[in-house]
Amino acid sequence: MSDSTSDLLKLLVGVAAVLIIATLIGQWLAMRQRATQNTGRAADEESAIAKVSVIDNLNARINAWWAMVVLMGLAFLGGKAGVIVLFGFCSFAALREFITLTQTRRDDHWALAAAFFVVLPVQYGLIWYEWYGLYSIFIPVYAFLLLPMLAALRGSTEQYLVRVAETQWALMICVFCASHVPALLTLDIPGFEGRGVLLIAYLVVVVQISDVLQYVWGKLMGKTRIAPALSPSKTVEGAVGGILSATLIGALLWWITPFTPLQSAAMAFVSTLMGFMGGLVLSAIKRDRGVKDWGHLIAGHGGFIDRMDSVLFAAPVFFHLVRYGWDVS
Image (cartoon, rainbow, N blue to C red):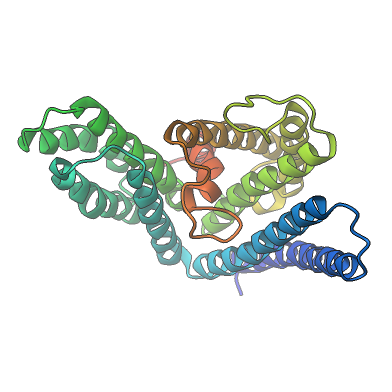
């Protein structure tokens, strides 16, 4: 067994241990709540129903986390092919969710077909072939020029700029940003050869655990709301506590990265800060469209974009910081 696989298994075992503890706590809370209801001690029926709903949602989230960790672990063990297929599928699902909330018309079918069946596979194909010079500009340059041309060929001018811009935004967030996660495998870091999957695991774990910790700190100490109209649950206390806690965890995970502990803390801080802003931006889009979640595919989490929003914004920045600071290609 290689050192990379051994370290990856250690990380997965650590994540599984955290999920086992969370599962036990969730089941204990559910049993305790049922016992309270059966003995009729619930003084306020409405409050009891709300508590059951929160606990059920917590357990649904934990179960979904188990499924996601198993799926991601299998993809990591599958190496480059497994990671590219996994994030290619996530991009497809996220793009579908985004497009369902845009003002598309029948006249946009050519542009949409090109986005799903040409741009997306080409972007991930370029990453497979490690063609950095092209995959770093393919969507923001060539796809951004192609889509307006296809839309214009259909001759419809109604809301033309809005329709084109929304499709371009969907591609930028769901495909371009997401593809920078598997693109980490293409970096040439001295002394870190064959360990790119660990860099991906580091990014995903740090950013996702920041989301969880922001929620926990917010519930424990949250008082000052950051943007009530966008996300009532996001507070200054939750954001600061979650980001700093995740930064500490990122520093402790330096051993699976090419960073020193101090560098790892800095990278984790930037990634979690970008992740927080990603969640805020995508919440703004949801509120603009009058929906609570991007989809309903993942129980307790909403849609793919609801789960990936922080990673989507953190990935490109993390990729370019690593490439600038450690890559020698």
